[in-house]
Amino acid sequence: MAELTVLFDGSCTLCRGSAARVNRFDKAQRIEFLDLHDPAAQQRFPQVDREEAMRRMQAVDLNGRVFSGSDAWARIGLLLPGWNLIAWILLVPGIRWVAGKIYAWIARNRYRWNRTECEDGTCRLHVGKRTPSHN
Image (tube, rainbow, N blue to C red; front, side, top):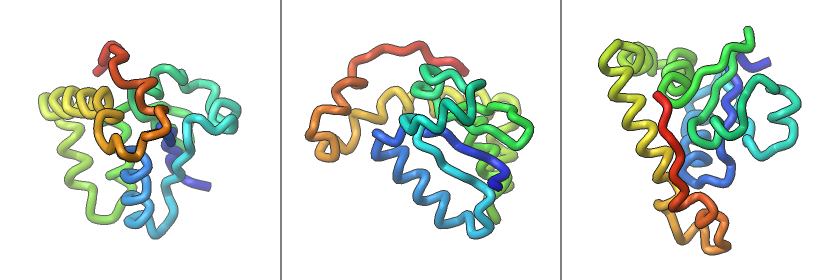
C-alpha cells in the first residue's frame, strides 16, 4: 500500500506529466496517483472535497490527513530520494506562503498551456473560470 495517495486532475496534461515524472523517481512505489475523475477516488477518499481538489491537487496520507497544493508537493518530496531538501524548503514559513501563491497561479492557468492537447474542447470548460485561490 502506498504511503501517500495523490488525487490529481487527469484531464490536465501538466498534471499527468507531473505525475509521470514523480513516478519515475518513486522506485519504492511509496506514492500512488489517482485521477480525481475516477469514481474510485470519491469512494476511497470521501474526506476530499472534489471542487477543492479541482482547484488544488490533494494528497492523502495513511492516517487520512489531506494536504493541498504546494503542501501536497512537499509531502511528495519527503517520500522521494533526493527531494527532501526541496520538500523542507517548501514548508518554511514565508517560503510556504510564496510557494502556495505560485502553485495557485499555476493551477488556475494549467488549462491555458498545451492547447494542442485539448483540441476536443475539454480544457475550455476550465479556462476563464475564476475560482478563489486558497493558500
